Amino acid sequence: MHCTSHMGKRLLLLLLSIGCCLAGFAAESYTLRGRVIDRLTRRPVAYAAVVLDGQGDKGASTDSTGRFAIERVRPGIYRLAASCIGYRNTLTPEYVVSAATPFIEIELVEDAAQLDAVTVTPTPFRRTAESPVGLQVIGLREIEKSPGANRDVSRIVRSYPGVSFSPVGYRNDLIVRGGGPSENNFYMDGIEIPNINHFATQGASGGPVSIVNADLVREISFYTGAFPADRAGALSSVLDFRLRDGDPEKHSFKATLGASEVSLSGNGPLSERTTYLFSVRQSYLQLLFKMLGLPFLPNYIDAQIKIKSKLSARDELTVLGLTGIDNMRLNTDEKGEEAEYLLSYLPRIRQETFTVGAVIPPLRRTAYAERLTEPQLSEQPQPEIPRQRRIERREPDAAAAQRRTEDDAAG
Image 1 (tube, rainbow, N blue to C red):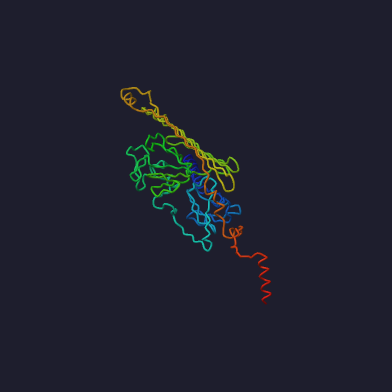
Image 2: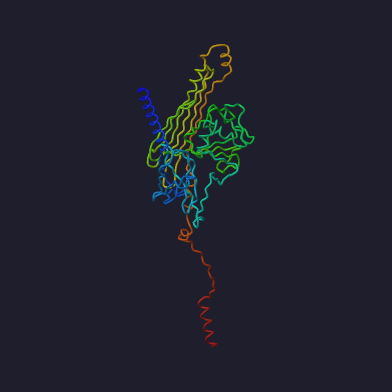
C-alpha cells in the first residue's frame, strides 16, 4: 500500500512537470526586429507604423533611424503591414516567427497624392496591381502546409486552374494552358535560371526533385498570362522566385534531415554592408535504394548562395549562384535474370547545372531624378530666353546732318 502511494506521487509529479514544460512552450514568444526604408532613396523612414496583419493591437513605430521592434510575438507565420503619411500602405510577404527569425526590411513607396487623408482597410488577401488575373502569389504558409507537395513549388501549382502535369507521376513537368513543359520560364531574384529540377530530360523542365531549397524562399509569383515586361519571352508560364536576404545583425544556421536528403543552410553578415545566404543539400537515396535491392541508385547534390552588398546609399548589388549535380548509377551488385534484364536498358545519368548572375536594380539609378519636386525644380537656374531684336534703319551721319540743316533753314 505504501509502495502504491509512493508511485502515485511520482506519477503526479511527472505529470505536473510535463504540464509546466508544455505551458512554457505555449507561452514562448519572440521579438520581431526590422527597418523601414524608402524604396527609391534607400533612406530610413521615421515614425512609420508597423503592425501584424490582422492584429492591429500588436505593432510598433519606427524610430529616427527607421528601426522597429515588435515584442512578445507568438511563433507562427505572419505578414507585416506598414504605413506612413506620404507613402503607400505596404503588406510584406510572409515571415516565419521563431528563434531564427531574420532581420526584416520593409520598403515603402512614396505617394504624394495621399497627404490629405489615410484610409486603412483590412483584407486577408494581398492585392497586386500588376497582372491581377494571371498571377498567383505563393507565400510561406502555402509552401509549408500544401498537402502532398513536400514543399516542392512545382507540385503546389498543380492545383491551380489551367495547370496540368506529366502523366508520369514522379516528374514535375508543368503543362500550363496547353503549352509544352519546355515553354515555362524560371527566374530567381531577377536572374533567369534554365532548370529547377534534378534529373531533368532534354526538351522538358521537370524532374523528380526540385533544386530549389524551400528554406531560402521568401515568396513566389506564378504568372499564367499577362507577363511583366522584364519577364517577357515565356510561352506558357513564369515562376518568379524571391529569396530571403541574409540577416545583417547575426549569424544563424539550420540543419535538416529529410525523407531523402540532408541539408545545411545559414545566413548572416559578411561586413557592415554585405550579407550572405546559402544552402547545401546531399541526397542519401542511393543508400536506401541499395538496401531495398533496386537496380538504380540516384544521387544528387545542390547548392545555392546569395550575396547582397550595398554599394552606396542608393545602389545595391546582388550576386546569385545555383548548382545541381545529378548522378544515377546502376546497382551492379544485384544478381539474377530479372536484375540483368533491368540493367540492360536502364540509362546512367550524369548531368550538371550551373547558374551564376548579378543584378543591380535599375530603379536605384533613376531614383534621385524621380524624386525632384516642384519647389526643387523651381530653384534650378532657368535658361534665358533670347529677346527679339528690334532692327532700325539708320542713315549715315553726313546725310542726317544735312537734313537737319535743311529743316532749320525752312523753319
